[in-house]
Structures are given as C-alpha cells and as structure tokens.
Length: 505
Image 1 (cartoon, rainbow, N blue to C red):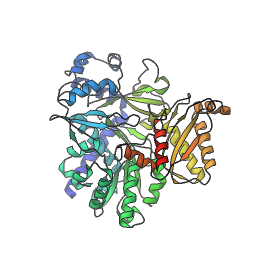
Image 2 (cartoon, rainbow, N blue to C red):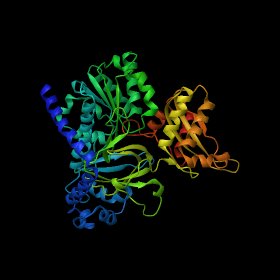
Image 3 (spheres, rainbow, N blue to C red):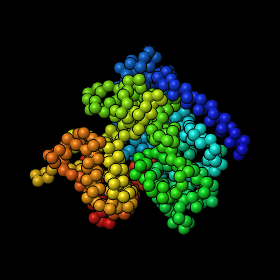
Image 4 (cartoon, rainbow, N blue to C red):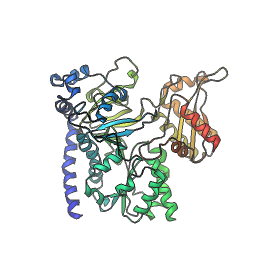
C-alpha cells in the first residue's frame, strides 16, 4: 500500500502540472481537443457524412454540423446497440449509460467509448483526488476507503455485443482490480438494483472499514447515513468513521442539504467538494475549498460551446466558444466528445463566474424551469430563494418540487410548491413571503409578472408529509444513485402525482 500511494502521489503531481497548463492556455487546449476529435473520427460514417477531413476552423465546424439533442442521435445509437461499428466514433462501442433524465420518463442510452471511459470519466475521478490532495497536503484520505453509493441498475445485455446500465455500474465493471484497496462496498453490493437492500448490505460491509471519504448524490446519501446511525445507535457519523474527512458530491444542489450534513457530521474539519459529472461526461470540479465555483476541465476529450439562454428559443441560436462567453450570463451547454456526441445539447445551463481560469456554476436545466407566464424561473433562482427563506425562518428543507397553477375563470396564475421540511418554519406565512420577495429580487421577469398580482399570485405552498418524495420516487422506479427529483416543471404532471399520492398516504 505505501508503494501504491507513492505512485499515486507522483501521478497526481504530474497531473496538477497539466491542469495548470489548460488554466493558462484554455483556448489553445480547446482548439486542440476539437481537431483531435475530428481527426480521430474522420473515417467514421459521421465523419465522412460531414467531411471532417476538410474542416479547418472552429467556425467551419459550427457551419457544417447543426446542434442536436438525444432524439436526433437515437437512430445511430440504436444501430450502435445492435453492434454496428464506426458510426459516431471509431471502433465498436460496447457500453451505454442509461439515463432517465429529470424532465421526462424516456430512458436515454448514452454511448460510452473506451476513450471516454479512460479520458473523461476515470480521469475526472482521478483529478478529484489530485486536486483535493493539492489543497490538503496533510490529508489521510488515501489511508482509508471511499464509500460510494452509486446507481441502481446493473449492467445488462442489449445483445451479445453491447451492455447498458447506470454510469456508476459501468465504471465499476471497468475499474482496475487495485481500486478495491480504496473503495467500499464490494462490486457485488454496489451493483444491487434494489436501493433499500443495497443500503443494508453497504452498512454490513462498511461499518468496520476505515472510511475516509464519501462519494455520491447528497439526497440519497442522507438516507444511507441516517440508516447507519439507526443501525449503530451512534449520535453522529464520526462516531462510526472517525477518520472521515471529505464528501465528494454532485448531481443536485448541495445547499438545501448543508445544514443536515453539519448535524450528521459535526466537525469544522469536514470537507465538501462538488463535482459536475453526468452520463455524457465529467465536466467540472471544485478546485478551491474556499469558493464553490467549479473549474471547467478542458483537456478531457470534450469540446465546449455555449448558447446564450436569451437566444435559446430562437431559430438557429448562436453557439459561442469559450473566448466569446460573458461572465454572469446563463448558457445552455453544447458538447462534442470522444464518445461520439457531436454538438450535443446536454440540457444543462451554466453561468461563468471567472475566465482566468474558466469557472462555472450550474444554474439548472433547459427543460427544468417554470415559464408558464413568461417568468423564466430557473433552478438557480429557486435554490437561492429557498436558501434565504429557510435562513429567515429557522427551517430546513429535505425535498421540494414546484410548477405552475394555470389561470382559470376565477384563478390567476401562480407557482405551487410542494415542500417536505426536515424542520418546519417558525412562521409559514413569513417563509412564503421571503420566498416570493427573494424570487422577485433574483428574477426581473418574475418580479414583472408579480407586479400588483396582475399575472401571478403569491406562491401557493403545500406541506408534504414525511417520506412523500421518497415514496413517489420509489413508485416511479427511480430510487437511488443517479435519479434526481425534478425541482421545477413547466406543467403540472409531477405536482398532480405528488398531491394525489399525499391524499393516499
């Protein structure tokens, strides 16, 4: 183990030098990534169709290929799943990450090539620890194990040629044997499909391990950690794993859960590190413990473009390269990758907070918003407003979802919020008022629609019963791992399902 740690530390040192290079020369690195991708894929069906060999500039790349969503790629992905080769990326693609998404129920199957496994996903995981150790040189994180709580879908066969499952399952299937020295639980337990069974097995396997780090989605980890305390009778997690020092999290906004984690892990020395990764790629990492902005990782085999959200619904909206972006604006992210996704609209929105180096915040989804009345409310607005409302009313939120109340004969428009509180507000009316006022402050379109209650009424709030969201996700077959509760929707589908379930509970 000491010898292995020495090798890891040497690799980390070398990698930090490479990260510093793309910090200093971001545009050169991104241009090199694009032309490496085009060169690698020039003899594929896609490369021949768009004549990748003749593309000489980033502007020509934009002209030649249009921006696409998953549905546009689906026919090619179906062919890949049946074993065809050299379609979007050279060679055969055996792995497909199943992604249910957050705004519709249709499963997506994202191709994961050998190159994207190694150069995007595994490199991203390694870089998390490289950056963490750079910021915490005295860390003992490598002296113990990382407790991982992944997805709930095993790898399954499409055919004899290809397999699908949660990205976390695919990573486990392809992880080198020596990673078992640093990870718990075992692969067999990590791949159990039934979430509640998996949690019980994780507890059995991991209680006696020296767990020094956690990695996963904050909402599902709360379930696990509370069950650990119930099982052991301990009052906090540090009594179970005293060497625990960092929680590497992603998938959902962490702020709504921060206070709960402080209670579960009551230590000022506990570190929290955010990542931005998805089935399509590993995009950004929090590289500064004092600042929760995320460093955009530019040398992973991902070429980035950004559509200004103010133009998103225009015909042929502009897609900007890094040197064209402006700080503080919302952008929809477009990626081209060594997994064979070309100018792919991933569905996430970000804003840049810095350009030396390039840092971002995740602000929401292109499809997860409320815009029933022209208010263009995004998840970032909602999270910030809820943070202020909970602070003012001494409350904590466990889960929430919101959507529109549509206008009727005697009904003005409104936003309806279903909130499951970990700790209820001292004053519910004040909570709603602060939420409303904060949204006005954060979003001028919302403020305009709320003016004198002409279009939008004050928010409507339904207090959810304990366990409502968990039961709802369970009934939808979306418990665990990479499944996320939809925060905002532009229709009432989720709201009506939750209200109906609450009546039956």
